[in-house]
Length: 469
Ligand SMILES: [Zn+2]
Ligand SMILES: [Zn+2]
Image (tube, rainbow, N blue to C red):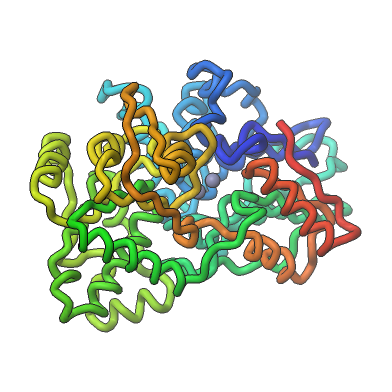
């Protein structure tokens, strides 16, 4: 068995890992097929980043851990390269994936409806929805030689608590004389994140391929971050400014709405909270929020309890959704003219484009504005620049325009939807049979190194490796 990487080794984006078995008569499996983003695309032209630069001849299946674009964005290119094998995903991911791919095609590739539909038809033909905790057999190239090392491979998705439908993957490889379990973490959620249950460790893993986004950091506790969130909003209300929250459509947006509903519910007699406008400026985010409501069977106990009490954690009075581009521009002009507090959630999460850019261009120069980062900002993204230069009174370039930053910049780490170092260590520590081999991927260098040292201290006999392309 060998595992090679076509992304998410020199950074966090472009996740695409390949598991090869049986060197004589090979079968391969892809785990995710994501897009590179931010500085991780530097030095490559855009066609190169997208190209499937590996042979797909022996690939028997694509396994999708979750539908963030940096894990699924290259699927259209995989299909264009002739990939015609099953795509396995959890039931919720399978339901979200066509929306994500359609959006990715519209934003980055083509507006041609026929082309988009052709790609979606092909995707729908190949996708196989699987419930969590079910073993299913994957296709294997069988040779006439019965002694090939692996003749059966099975897959199971386990809840990863990262976004709706997210999973880590257990793969059982069985041969005549051996059994080996490989676990791919995908992206793991943080414990005590709102809405979805935290991931439970696998019972066993022989080989573990694990993400390390926050391999060198620990998040704030949930209480702290709720308090910080309330504080920021309070300031915004007092100075009648806007709070801009760049967020991906899937995951953080819903977590934040969930938190806002809670704060509003707790402050039923406080007019400030009853009158605040919470604007989700993204048709995509609205679609995904709808999906989160649809799959409420996957919510955690606390969220289900609120439903039972007749509350609607993702659908409340103060919430407005903006759909058309015209309305989007109108809202910006309106907010600019009225001197009224508002909270705006818009994509993209790292400010690399999307509707948040128009808000940032208009409102970053205003001292009454607050920008709140709730997610990881990759190097080279506009988000990272604002985070770095904003507090020093610097500037950024947005759409080739120099924009001064007079806004106050905040970062709250707990809503990142990624496990922190503590969670990543516990993920391994709580396994019954611990891995002999750990491969660390999906992180900046410092994060990978820090996590590697922590794992080595925990498992002195294990082979700990940092993934390389
Ligand atoms: Zn993710
Ligand atoms: Zn990821």
